[in-house]
Amino acid sequence: MVILRRFWLLWAALAAIGTGFLLLSAGSLSVGPLMLVTGYCILLPFFLWRSFRKSVGE
Image 1 (cartoon, rainbow, N blue to C red):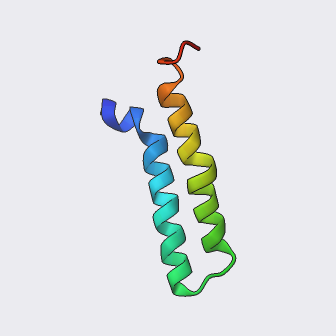
Image 2: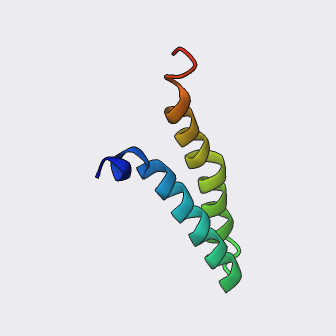
């Protein structure tokens, strides 16, 4: 349970990226790229920031 609680943002990012690729392959040219941008540019960097902010002294 602790692993799921710590990495929920990573799982959300991976789900958004996977959903984006599936939607793109199905032909959705509006929602697919939005899911990819959300996963790659918002959720994944936020997960990395939250994971490593304590180790850099903040």
